[in-house]
Length: 329
Image (cartoon, rainbow, N blue to C red; front, side):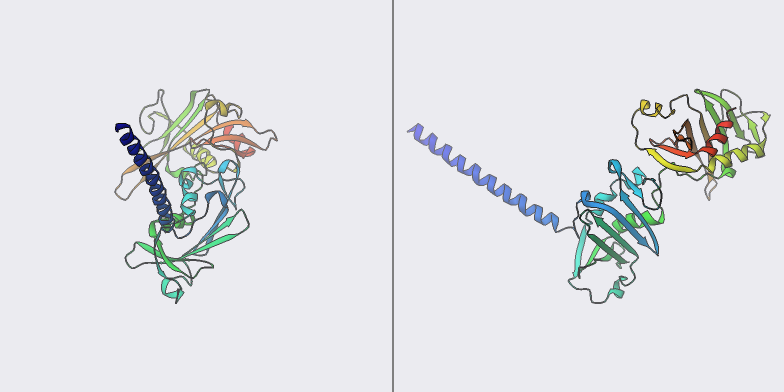
């Protein structure tokens, strides 16, 4: 009798497990359908090849290149800033949909869609393209009106999403090594070679004159008593600020030995320039602009450089490199 009861219980538990799995799978399917419906559209990030964004008649565009990096179309071999670009493609593959306002737009001008504030064109591997138009902000300031070319539905998408792509045009995601440097804001100029300080120059806070700094360096900017040729220093910093970049040679190097082949090891000539910025309250913020100068390229047209402590090796114009290296002589 006990054996029969045991077998019966085993059968009941087995059937319960089967039904449980079926119900669980059914629930997963419903959840997936529900999640998909929360998006305005869905595009696989792997299918995107080019992106163009227009805001206020200004257009910037990018294309997918080697090693999953994205590059500016109008700049030869210049990649988008990894930090700024990270997550952009995933965001573009499908914005969250707040809600559909109408299945058919009655009057585009009511929503700022007759002259959209933002137009995003996405090009796909199969040759298709999708154009997203984004118009005015909703009265509550939380969303924007939008529609997709070829579709009639008027929808609202999150204003934060709109802001991310708007900023790509307003403040392009150039790599950090495409820097701007105002010589008049410089307060310190240091040259290092073979891991030793070759020369250090600082600007006096009181009279704005430059002086040679004492070693070891102390102060910010570095202290010193011997007066330096201020005009010469400003001209050298101005020259550094006018660095002409020919191309990006290698991106995202991970290990110190990866730089050795370009002559960019720890003993390479190194420049560090400190600049200062004052806010409206008179608070000082100090910035560093640095670069290492490596070997000349095989075709003798430029030098390998790492700038702004990035992980990228770039190639700069030879004449700029020659003059910069003369500072160490």
